[in-house]
Image 1 (tube, rainbow, N blue to C red):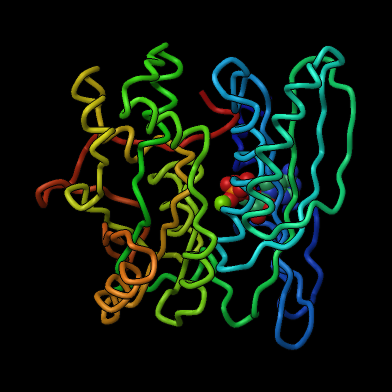
Image 2 (cartoon, rainbow, N blue to C red):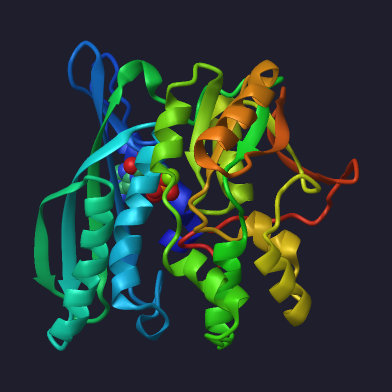
Length: 335
Ligand code: ADP
Ligand code: MG
């Protein structure tokens, strides 16, 4: 048997089966967006770690080093936001081929530095090695949160409504433009979609605010795609999720380019990953207040895209009918 037979999640399961979690009140190990380590009576540390590998996560000609530096930190900040936390410290591990241009490194660091300054994150350490092949960037972020505000993937309850911040599918559309070679820089839709992929918005403020709301029962960030990440909430919370595709917002940019190139927007919206939007389940009776307050605070609409039910699995509906075509999110080892 090979790791591709196991799949990414099978492998993580194999790891977590082998290592016992400490019997410590408030500790959360493998299985959520961040690990939780109790700090004191009131607060906990959040820890998350993500890797970007050249030719897997990015192609060097398709991303400016500045954007790559930004994105390497952004994907980690997104996991802190998904738990409702405040990011504080980052550790940067870089494996670089010896030929790497120092100007490229400087620009990479500029992008990372800009986001770290903006989000008040301190670069506290890291590791540097030579790579025999591809560039590999691993960033670990430590955040802090009032323990009572932690939002997990568990906790969604039948009757809850499901919400998503921002748009899904834009990052996937940007990736498609890059891989299909449509880099027309004078076309604003192209620039915006590529930007959504290379420089995703980070929902730190939104995550912190959602963390303070008791009505928000479970939350995750969209790294693997709506289908896959909704399934994580469904499995962790032991519930079924029904997503109404007529309610899932599709950006104007994505509609334009999908029309032009004949893309299936549904597939992009639910299967493509790396949007780093927040997906959460909240008490239905408070949904309208949450949506209104969100708009007031962040100036963007918050869309209700489905609901939590008893049962298991994630089903998609369009015009009241179940969509038959199965859509899957991203798994690193599966084809
Ligand atoms: P995310 O997409 O939110 O970053 P992942 O799918 O990468 O989350 O990871 C899911 C969970 O599995 C997390 O709790 C993470 O800490 C854990 N995990 C992933 N890879 C490993 C590993 N190699 N060893 C231990 N835990 C891991
Ligand atoms: Mg995550």
